[in-house]
Length: 169
Image (cartoon, rainbow, N blue to C red; front, side, top):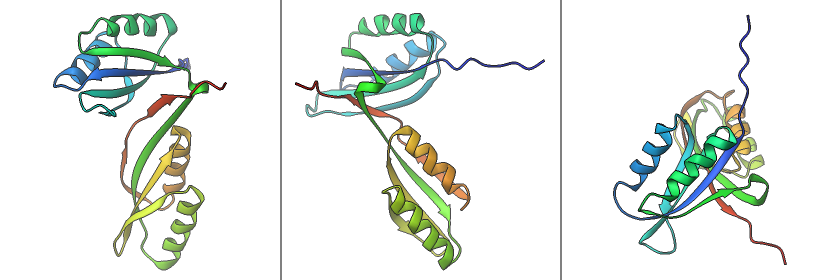
């Protein structure tokens, strides 16, 4: 008997939080308590040094995600919680990919692919290169899949960072 998993929709939740210790832990703990797996998380300071922006992506059903958002709004250190519409949001990730490039032909091929994805080679050694690429999560996935043919030695991804688009007037 084959078990098929139903893929639940991806939700993007953006938070404005106070920039102080323990906030990330409290947010992650609350989400874990609702039995969600955080797909990606990204946190960093904003234009105000006392405030950080946190972006979390997760898969889940609508009623449960809505309940999580309501509970998050009650946390003391959270200033604002927003659910972002993927169709009206700019979403970016960054990845560093270390690949095996043992000879000049492999390096030439790598350079071609990196340029096609508008990436950059940021480090080069005799048998490896580290590539930086930025874009949508789908673009990062496609680039990583392409790099598998070189042999991925190491990989690091930032997770999604997102901002809603400005309204068109």
